[in-house]
Structures are given as structure tokens and as C-alpha cells.
Image 1: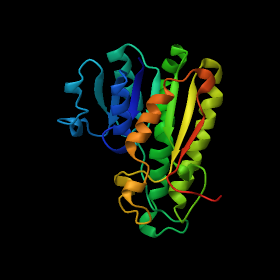
Image 2: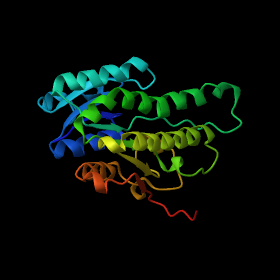
Image 3: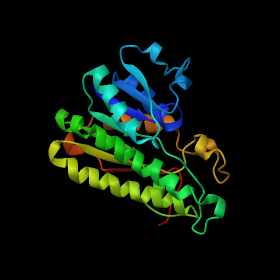
Length: 235
């Protein structure tokens, strides 16, 4: 049984990962912007009182990372897994409009600094566990650039580089990192996509099962990168 913090766990991929890990018997802290959104859902902590708590977390707020980790450790007396699912999509092009000036900074704060600061806060606990695991929802946009999403793609390339730095830093301490890189996933973030039907996309539940399976693997078998794409790419 693992003790995990999952960000962005109130919907989409994060919620699917949380459900899969609950099914496997793990203990979870769901780090979400508004814990009230979980009330009455199948991820309501009141339904899983022994193994599930929720904690307010905004990736843009630096102090939230320390508080989430401290709350998790105090409640479960330990922590060995962090799963970064929180992220934002902004359609910021290379030559952005004046009213988009704040978007590159927002993408950086949420998509890069959010995982960085939360990982930093959790690092001592992950080292102590000697079997720490970190999973990061990066996106295929962290591997290649398609279209004109300059801001989003730049943040995801940076996040992939951060994953490599985590791997290098934690290897000798038994910490293993997996950068999960899906293409389009059938979530709210992809609701405006017209090039692919929702049922043809990767489903959040499939990523949830993959996430749970990764936690069963020994140090010697954890993949650093897991690319999951519902469409064929020729480059």
C-alpha cells in the first residue's frame, strides 16, 4: 500500500488516477483547488475516511505545496508517491496578442513551477521511503510541437526537462520518475477538439489503470517515459 498525493484529482485524468489507486487499496491525499467539489462524488473523503483526504491546493500559490505535503504526512504518517495531474491549456501562439501577455507566465507557474515546488516539498519524504515514485502528466506536447501552441508546448518541454532532472537527482535514493505523455484524452480540456471523436481519444480511465500498474513495478522496471497516443504520428 502506497501513500500518494495526487494533484488535479477532482476531474479528468487526476480523478481517474485517484479512482484506480483507491481500487488498488492505496492511501490518497487529493490536492485540489476546491475540496468542496468532491462532496457527494465517488471521491468524497467521507466515503473513504480511512484512506482518503482532500487538501486545498493551487499550483500558483507557493505555500500550498508545503501545506499539502505536511498535511499528508501528518494524517498518514508518511508519503512515498506524488502524481502531478494539475495543469492548464492556453492557446498562446508565438506572436501573442496584447491581451495574452499574461498567459506565458501563467503556463509556466502552473505547468512547471507547480510540479517543481510540490516535488521539492515532498523530496525528503520520498528519500526517506527509499522507494519513492513520481508520475508527471506531461503530454505529447512535451515531446514535439504541433500547430501554434507556443506557450503550452514550451511549458511542457520544460516540464519534461524537469522530469529528467528529478530522475537524475533521485536515482540513487530509489526514487523513480515516469513522464506520462498522452495525446488527446477525452476530458474537458479536449472538448473543443474537432479532429477526433471523443470515443476515439485515449480515455482517462485507461490512464488511471496505467498509473496504478506503474506503482506495482520494481525499481529496475519503472519506465521513465510512457507515450500514449490515440493517433498515428509520422515524425
